[in-house]
Length: 151
Image 1: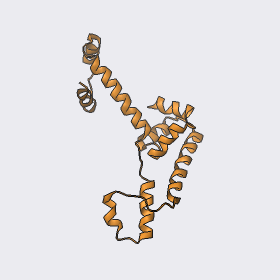
Image 2: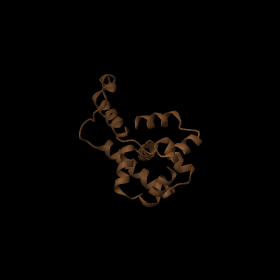
Image 3: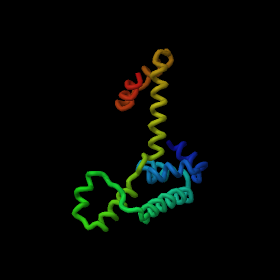
């Protein structure tokens, strides 16, 4: 994931596709934001470009006057007790601050994991793979479960 982040900070900070993905996820998840910071991946300029774009996107949604946003049913009953103008503002805030997609680094991690486990399962008939697997400590339970699902 460090290589993925480093490559994107170096090559794709201004990529519209990557920025769209980051806007939809409202940035990186906690784990991957700190991975980038602690690993000194990217730089202050890259982070500022990305998060300025995200903050501006949220502010644009909040200033949009196209009527109230739609919230989940869980909030609807509670919000009915609040005056309409305040309720509309809360609904807009909830909508603007709710990610529409997962962290792109999490998505990449999960796709990489699926690919690697698929190769492992496909190669189980290969003696080199079975020998390597037997010589290792094996798979952790979450990865074992995913590998079994791929069989």
